[in-house]
Image (cartoon, rainbow over all chains, first blue to last red; front, side, top):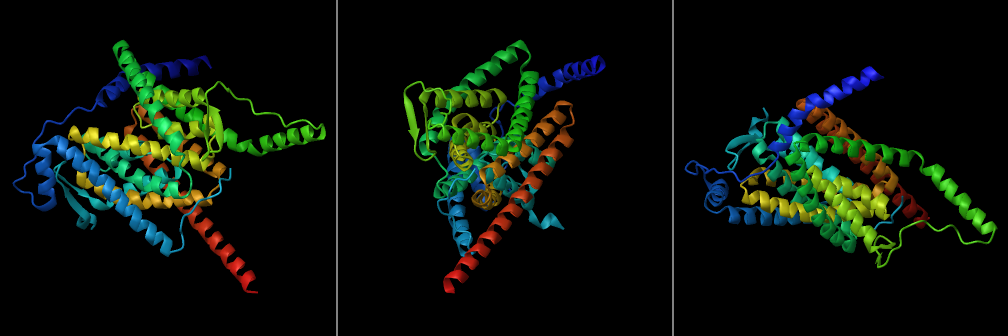
Amino acid sequence: MKRLLVIISNLILLSGPSTLVWAAAEKAEALQKKIDVTKLSGINYFFASWYNDNMWLYAIIVTVLMGVVGMLIALVADIILKMIGMETHKIEHHE
Amino acid sequence: MLDIFNVYLPIAEMQFNALILVAIGFSVGVLGGFFGVGGAWVVTPALNIFGFPMAYAIGTDLAHIFGKSIVATAKHRKMGNVDMKLGLLSIVGSVIGVEIGAQNVMWLTRLGIAGPVVRYLYMVLLFGLGIYMLYDYATKDKRAAAQAAKVAEAARAELAPPARKSWNLPPMMHFPTSGITISFWTVSGVFLFTGWLSGLLGVGGGFIRMPALIYLIGCPTAIAVGTDLFSVLFSGAYGCFTYGIKGRVEIIAAVLMLCGAAIGAQIGVTAVKYIRGYGIRLLFAIMIILAGSSVALKQFNLTTAASWVVMCAALGMCLVIMVKLWNGFKKEQAEKAAYAGKGGA
């Protein structure tokens, strides 16, 4: 038992430095980079240009796009599920 | 052969397989819709395994979580599983709690022990919660029988059945959707605590809030899932925006993942209809124990093994949920057919 405790304590102490590195690595800072848009076209060019020009606007575009696409897919998927007979309505809550 | 699905990601400036992104989104969508969690703890290691740049993994993940939460919350709301009042209160409590947790992390960092404390707390929480939920599942019949015996005994003695012990410090709040009346201080305390934990651990907090809603507040399981997703929606929106400002969202990858996740979320939410509350709790317990094992592996620097464990667990659980959904659906169809047959006769 004592031997097991010694092994566990050692493993905990050994893993300390690596976990500190892991914790430090998780901080998110703004990326300072510009994307080369010369080879891009269409939608890729559009997003990359906003990314380069105005990060705030890029963030707004991303957030709005996610919301709109989410709602559209929800609508379409709901119609499809209804068609195959998996419609949803209020359910009884059984534990 | 799968190279035909490669797409160019303009922000990450690399080629990546669209099929992988849709598949990861789909599986985490099923889990998110079913358990009421964001699923960042599955997506980030999964993206990492397939070579997605880590610089964009968290931001892209949060962006798709926001879109997916809209899909899942809308569907849960239709099913009557979202307690708006409780959800809004959870957001307020969680924001304050997260700030306190973040301050604690900074203090621990100054002491030089943030990493180990956070990692061990994470493991204790995942294993502790998982084991408790398994125990709760295993003893549910025994507890139900004991409660029924108490009520029967009280009825024989013409007494009122024993009241459930709770802390009733005013003001009391009533939540009609959940069917509970509880002290404002209890609700605030619970959300402050879960927010503090998520701030301290640096996670979205869905997997902490969902069991807290069940065990500490007393919500029915399906309402806990729906209400938790409602809170995840707001944290996802904030995360998407703030990581967007920092240039860490790969928008094409996020949209592709969202396509998979939105379909997966529909399946996950629909499965809630066919599985009883305790069934959801059991699967959740297994999932978080496996997630805890993954964190333990990471602790011993087995990062690749840890990522594979969490990804295989997610895929396995996804399969179980889909099978349960299919069986429930078939059973429902058979019952409908039998009912129609009786009506016809």
